[in-house]
Amino acid sequence: MITRLGIIGGSGLSRSNVFRTSEESEVDTPHGPPSSAVETGERVAFLARHGADHQIPPHRINHRANLWALKEAGASAVVGSCSVGSLQAEIAPGNLVVPDDYVSFWEIPTYFDDQVQHITPTLDPGLRQQLVRAAKTRSVPVRDGGVYVQTRGPRLETKAEVRVLRKFGDIVGMTMATEATLAQELDLRYASLCSVDNYSHGITKEPLTFEDICRTQEANARVVQGVLQTFVEAAA
Ligand code: HPA
Image (tube, rainbow, N blue to C red; front, side, top):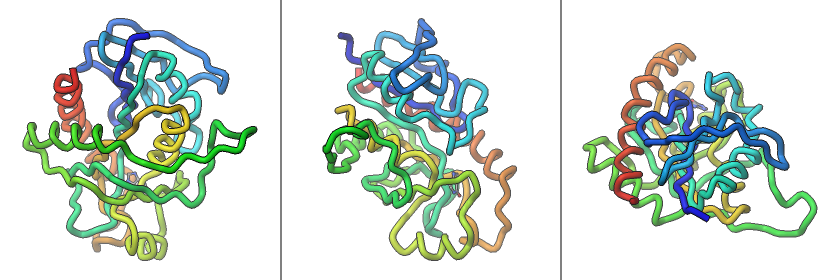
């Protein structure tokens, strides 16, 4: 079996065009169809988390199918690009964060529905360091470490929730913890490159709108794509 790097493209990253993929397969899994076709090249297997047309909202993503499909495509390690809000004034929109831990109180999708087995959550240190290095190579501001807090969505957090979450978390998003957990259950190494697309609700005096998040997301997606390209080339 060929070993590839699995890449899950997040918001703003539904195309694999910098990863030299040559084949696209519509696949099915025991957990249903993944979010998009899997695009494979010599080194990479790419999948768009929200679908090719960014049509799948975070609470409807079939994460179990997505990770399964990447493993089937020969991935032994997976990197997810994730859009996040910042919970801390010093982590500004436009920064990248490579989290080293996560908090997820509410989600429990698992492959272990019918067996007693428990993984110990770990974001892969080797992949994390490679991501940080790739960002530095591109001179993109990157924070090495931080706690990702996962909320359910699709709504954003209330100001009161943000006041609680920022006591123990640095960034907030709706997908990474589930993905990281499932990857580990499948014995896949996993790390995430998080793009800070907004200050979360109430961190600044500016009102937070979805339109503002989308605008920043689009600009940041180009940066994320470049960093991932460098990451893939260096991992060869
Ligand atoms: N909250 C939750 N998820 C997000 C945010 C946010 O502020 N920004 C991007 N994804």
